[in-house]
Amino acid sequence: MSYDILAILQEKEPSFSKGQRRIAQYIRENYDKAAFMTANRLGKTAGVSESTVVRFAVDLGFDGYPSMQKAMQEMVLNRLTSVQRIEVASNRLGGQDVVSMVVHSDMEKLRQTEEILDRDEFQAAVNAIIRAKRVYILGVRSVAPLANFLGYYLNYMFNNVHVITGFSTGEMFEKIVGVNGEDTVIAFSFPRYSASTTKGAQYCRSAGATVIGLTDSKLSPLGSNSDHVLIAKSDMVSLVDSLVAPLSIVNALIVAVASKREQELSRTFANLERIWDEYDVYEKQVER
Image (cartoon, rainbow, N blue to C red):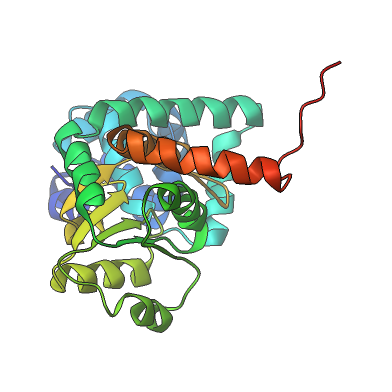
């Protein structure tokens, strides 16, 4: 279930105790910071006890504070400006070792992604890529490297792969205007969601193409406009969008598609190895 925290606060405010009003006021005025605070820290900041914060979450209809915090985080991730991201990151770090915090956060996102990824959706996406006449890959701004990485490997397997990154909405439509029902479109979008990617996915789907959305939720703007949704958990670390989990799903897609085109790939790479060797593409290993 998706919770709109601010709407719930407004609805239930008449029944709040004095302490709960303090919590609600702080969340309304500082939702970008509150979403990443522990129950203890939120309580101290709002001037109430940790137990009051936990009871507050339950009174709002959540299983506990972690569920409320998760709902707050999902709500705010797409609303944060770059300046707010820096402030939130500073609060989250709180003197911690940066390497440990980032690596453990990425490991947790990988764990969550492995648990929630729908395997049937994944297989449907693989099949859509294999049967496509043309494959279009949409990824702008911070997710452009994901699109380029996927395109790099799919180009070894298919003759008609189009990677579309770094274009304005108008230029994107110029690149996808010929999309039709024989094509498959793979699009990437994570908070803050790209409006041009959403519009591109909408157009491609209306033209009959199969759209595969790699995003953080089926309810995201891209998820709502995709035929197959591959969910990967993303996180925000200061200005950086952590895309470790999405990249892992991209790797899985490449491996799955490659396994179904093993014979074709073997012939392709046999020819490439000969060309690479003839033209000294790679440094030759010298035995010592």
